[in-house]
Length: 388
Image (cartoon, rainbow, N blue to C red):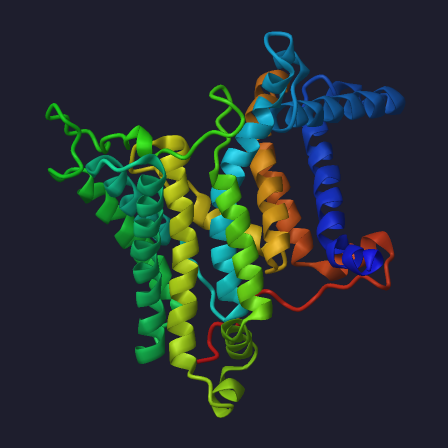
């Protein structure tokens, strides 16, 4: 069982090792103190190794644990970087699951960004407009976010099912619509902050709507990570243990055969996009209720687009998506510390992410580099998209 599980993660693991290796080379070559030593091979090698090692040490300190923080507080304060990693990874898990679920149904959901925005809008409105008891307030805000984003995503599925419009084109356009709608919405009377301020910033959500911080008030990690884990289990159960999951996978594998077997492809397409939208919107809600606390035009950041990379790295598997989201959260959280401590640009992190995706999408290259014969690449995770 262990060997079987390892065979499934071997490709992502080796892709990460290769990305870290080539990223280290890039870090060393960009160091001004390393290049002048190229005439002395041994000094050049040791200096390059030292430069890359310091950069990755800073990356670890910025994403997992920093002993320097312990000196100024308790042991728990040293895990502040891990708290930031979890904070960033939580929306990535949910948006990644959104793309993963769509992949399984034969759809390419590029619209997680727009669905994320609609979830954030719903959660923000309930969060600052009403006063409820703490638990009830959070639940109502999350449910509203799920409904808003499910409708937004489901409309894409309905358009594809009824008109044949390709979901990639539609979701890309819907991302623009959602972004500009948010910009307009933040200038309306309902979402304006008290005092007549016209800057695009919604009122902060009430304390009763905020997600609780489970590591103390000094660490920003909140209960959203547990919601993301529950969502991961739900997606795994839905895809592998439910009738609807079988229908999703059947349509994703071959829509024509599924239609012949009596499965309503149109209904499955609409439902799959609605559930995908709900997952992305849940990520938007957690972003507003757990860390931002106020809706802004930049609330979605790049979570919706990074979700595609996370889903690819996770091989369209719910558990793999969680691991990929945690990895990307760590890279993003640690990148700033790496830049501050070693003067290496934070863009190195983006290069490493791109290299991971490159090696994941080219398993033959990984097999060639490591001289492997038994590397299982798994089934393709890229949606057909045109299968009706």
